[in-house]
Length: 190
Image (cartoon, rainbow, N blue to C red; front, top):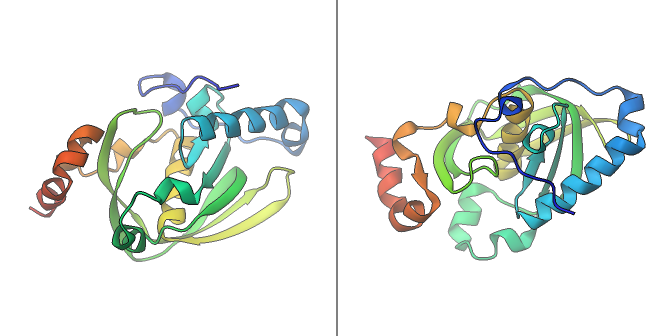
């Protein structure tokens, strides 16, 4: 079953989500929600999904970047993005406890702002403390594209969307990004 993906303008996307207790995490409701979110993410397809994007104002997100999602990208782009497959996992009540000093800019899209992309500066490396799917404490050290996904999803849990961080001169439809991507990159430099 696929859940409805909310689009920008829905109030829940701009509110800070509430933390989940251990009991809530382990509840049948939350475990079923995780499974439904995973189905929805695969169906979309996407690499991350935060609970507010499906109307649930809780600090829960899922991440999965399958190798098939980048198979059509040129090898130099995969290398530049430092993109490697990321297995399915859940982050609950996450906090970014450390940001790397180096910032990198790449185009991002969002399932809640369907059909658009923009250049977004983000830290190349992050350290995240969170709880996992079974309320176990986790520390995640991530770099490259995985770090970007984590920052993007954690932004959703704090009421932010990538458009709050984007270079506004690069905001474009996916169709125009495919057509003019290089020109949009150069606009960002000017």
